[in-house]
Image (cartoon, rainbow, N blue to C red):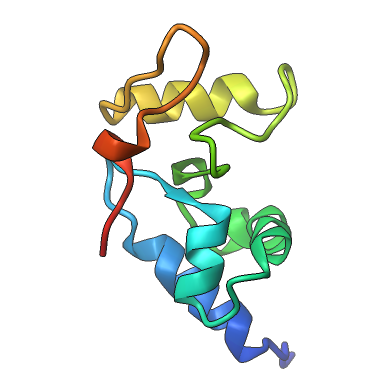
Length: 105
């Protein structure tokens, strides 16, 4: 079976696979690095549909405010735990300090 994947999707996956443990990237950052700075929501869709089957480190992608976008009890706690295991620190208001933990390729 042949699955057609567009080049933006391939670029997004490659970018996400490069995020090192202990660092995070934003949806917008991944979109921009993949050639479409206005496609942050598309990055979220790609993560949702491809993370498991392609082994993407989905937990390393957060919103532009340094916050987890998932809702409580819908993956939020899992993502936070995975990031904390990699050394990412959350502030008291559940924010990640992007000056410290943002991946800069």
